[in-house]
Amino acid sequence: MPIELNHKRLLLIKPSALGDVVQAAATAWALKARWPDLRLKWLVNTQFEPLVKPISCVDGTIGFERSRLKGLLAPLSGRGELKSFVRTLKDGQFDAVLDLQGLFRSGLFGWLSGAPVRVGERTAREGAWLFYTHRVMVPEQPVHARDRYDALARELDCGPPARQDLDVTETERADMRRQLQDAGFAEGTPVAVCPGARWESKVYPPEKFAAVLDRLAQEAGVTQPVLIGSSDMDSLCSRIVAACTRAKPLNLCGKTSLRQLAALLDVSSLLLTCDSGPMHMAAAQGTPVCAVLGPTDPRRTGPYGQPANVVSGDCELMPCLKRHCPGMGNKCMRDLAPDRVAEKALALLAMTADNMVGPRTRADG
Image 1: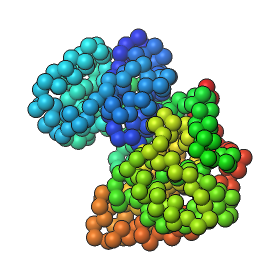
Image 2: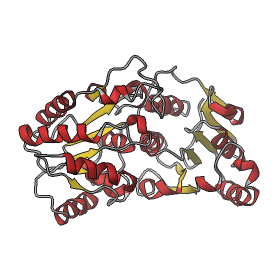
Image 3: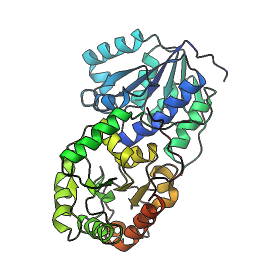
Image 4: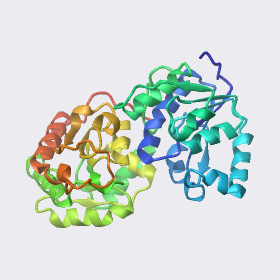
């Protein structure tokens, strides 16, 4: 589909969730690489706007307050707010829409923008495909979200993205190093740990996380792993701190903004994590990720470009893709031995002792 988009306006729709928004950054980079004078605006949940706005390939954002327009029929029922929102969309005078979300609401918003070209998946859920002028076949599942986004971008004549990072600057990295020092971090390069996830079935038991950290302290000298995550993970992090016998974790859970978190992951030598948004942030920054996965499929949601770094449990239902364990007592996570996770993390630390795991995808700036 040859479309000239230089000096044109495009609306990129990817409101949520955190990991998906992070992975969509690669698409934004690809669009700007193909069309340097493209005016790209990103429709994103307001909570993620501070993360997306500073990315230099993004020319602006349209904040979407999900809680006010929640659910399939909300765009039809919240008429007052919808009217104001639609006015904002139309004022953008967009020439094209690229819908990476692929739901009824995102398809509707693309259509309401008035853009003459609207690109999305041919098999988009909830009938979203009805709103598209260009319906793209993407690889069949299981396929990684990034590969689906790349297939949609190809419809706009974009090649593979040369960058996938969040455009963390040297100033942000320096500020994060100072924040770590102020918090009492005494080591050189941090090892970050994100023990929580949105699904309870994705969470590795905190006592097992503690056992992994104790082994890293004993065998790799990682005595101050840095615990990260949103404030609702604070209890989980506190349990890990209490269960450690050798490691002395520094708990920064709930104490960093999204940009600060991106900077922290950028300067870290490793992220040890469940299937989470920070997992995708670290992968985007080129930081090695030791990912502990249970109910989810690493081919679909693992750290992009690092499939060998996934450690999975063992359960006959895997991958069940369920938020709550379907009657197996969280077997996939419960029975995953800490030694298996520790051995993968130790191997990654050995590979990156010189702070290299292959080329970083970010540009120093």
